[in-house]
Image 1 (spheres, rainbow, N blue to C red):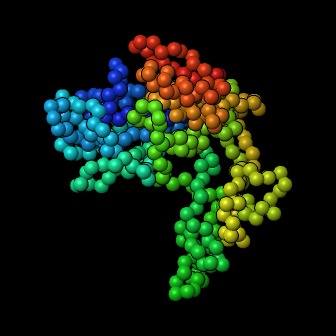
Image 2 (image 1 turned 135 degrees about the vertical axis):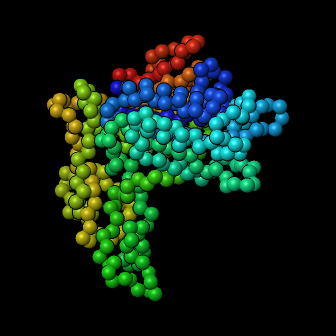
Image 3 (image 1 turned 90 degrees about the horizontal axis):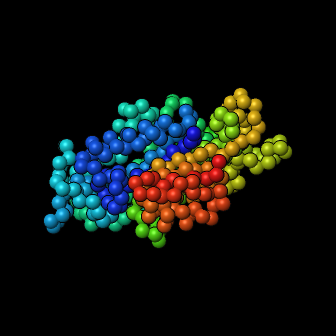
Length: 373
């Protein structure tokens, strides 16, 4: 049973990978959405009850390209047109309409029983150039966090991010939580005692600025490792899971820990604390959060753990496996294209000692590769 599923799909009407049975060349948006719901029903079936699904989807525009190629969709990221349609028969879509496919899929999954917990904006500071003159250049994609149940495993501490600004009373700086501001050269007295931010970092925000990551191999729908990393860190336990029932170990977090390290018990060391990067921050009358240990969430009584399992049903170039292996998690990748599985993903995963193929690619079958149990 997998603890986390993470997928970047090739999206609707953008690219033809030349593989029978591929998803993304359906005649209508409705057919594409139905197929995606079907796939993720199977993901839901094998996902642990407290597991999470992180789904990255791009968008496209309804268009009729020049020439005698028929009608189709153009990638919303400005990429080359790759999958012409025989005619524009999309219900409710007009030429030049943004199709809104990410939200169509997300809402369909919600209607199918998934909990839609967050929509995350992947902001690309280096987006694909576009020739459009009547709309902004597309510089983002969506990443959706979905779960099977209202309560699930989520390691907030593992993905805290640096504060945008840190209050330094000596320079009358400011912080985004409404701390100190300079007004006519004086500090507002009522804000003088505002606590400074948690030095472990702030809670992860829903806009992630991550550059796209080029690959020398010919794969169109790769996503950067830095986009995958926070999903795995938040969705799986760094300590591991119970080998008997599969439930994760969770952090024991002291949220009232003094920010002054000289006041910490010697046994705490530097665990889970990133305050060193915020030198000069206000420290008196303030507390932070540090990890003091780990505890099981089950009553099996087993002290050993095993890594969580990350599933990618659209394995592609193997990026999810690369990141999962680097973070000491097990992984299962499924890829329909033997070319991508054999020529791109497997070579990239070869340096990970635990990665071994468990099923060779055969005509009409999905090649599957995974880590050792």
